[in-house]
Image 1 (cartoon, rainbow, N blue to C red):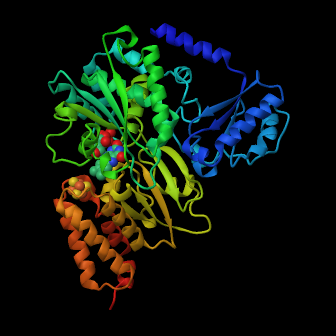
Image 2 (image 1 turned 180 degrees about the vertical axis):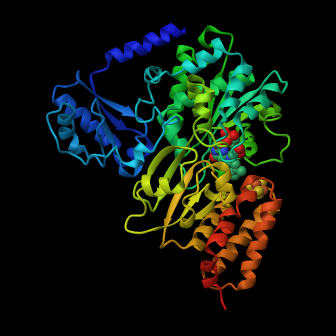
Length: 529
Ligand SMILES: Cc1cc2nc3c(=O)[nH]c(=O)nc-3n(C[C@H](O)[C@H](O)[C@H](O)COP(=O)(O)O)c2cc1C
Ligand code: SF4
């Protein structure tokens, strides 16, 4: 299809829509809380009331306040309801028509949890049906790709991404434009584009939600990237534990191929881009880029030394662009609204927004997208509503590679540099709130056990070091350790950090070091005297 035909498809879809909608969150969180049952009850109630022509019961992606699911939102009023049960359906249907009140509890959309958000990556999340291409088209879908193909050359696209200041959202924050420029300039007839949707950090579900809620956005970002760097094949690597994300991506790819926004001769141009999904077995280390590439090649998912970086020699030895899900999901908006618009959001060195999965001992758990530079206090206390009946002790960011930031430092702005300075990292966006009852040594031990289990065993410092560190932490927790054990633990942290082959081992000591830095008395009280 050409652009006019796509726009006409979107218009027809818009015109055919009933005036009222009941949007039902069909992302994994609400589904696991019987969202499907709620949706079916709503559909039955609409049909029973003879209102099928007036009210559409629609599947949408994540409505963000995941801890209060199943969530349902009504149009045109915009009212959102939480903890909806199937028996609430008749009251909700009456409410859409303006004939009733009551039913489930209403969500206060003026709460900072919502008002402090700036949805860019999540702009369609909860608004459109992720399984229908026409819905994405009504939200300007694939317009950025069209703009890139017809109004920009590949170098212009790279320049725009560079100017936007976007940095990789997978953890390290490497400048995206620079990475694209490196792949673009590397010679090679065959190049690849990979989307890293492995997301193995405990407490993280941002990428999962983006893939489940707006798969076309990720694919459009990948297609633009492929055009910019000169690739014709892409892979989305998703863990097998995310079956809904896999199913929706596959469906979106099929739809995209069907209308010619993916596949061959995209928009009638010579640009071809085929995408395939590759399913990972759920090893944390397979999120590391070289291990991921080995896994896609059908080999055991183990990291290898870098250089060469994937940008020079990646998948099957070809120059390969590998970016995170959220990184790609930012691209269509950057091209549609402009690099300067994007660069005006955030801080000097961390531009744009960041999606976090806010979890743990906090009143409001769910997905949030905030401008970079928002303070941890705003996120945890204002948006998250703090600890119910208690006080925050620490916030863990960056998962097993990150650290625990104490409550005294909650005024820290969330940006790459500030979090690193505190001994944590931004990571991919998992944010776990801990209350006063949390034993910080246990927290360090939990993450060390995770790293020990997930270590691929290729290099000795990580393979043996994580085991030794875990044993020392266990000894401390059991009050069997002395001062010398704590000193030994710190020495091991330094050794494993400096000598491990990949990021898993290099960062595995972070939760230990950050808890020692900020919560040393907790360790000391557990030591034998
Ligand atoms: C142990 C380990 C696990 C990782 N897991 C992920 C992951 O799940 N998702 C991701 O995007 N990046 C992950 N990374 C970072 C990737 O290696 C890579 O830097 C990233 O995909 C690059 O994309 P970006 O520049 O868009 O951030 C991981 C790194 C390490 C060391
Ligand atoms: S640091 Fe750990 S995960 Fe990474 S290569 Fe070495 S053993 Fe494997």
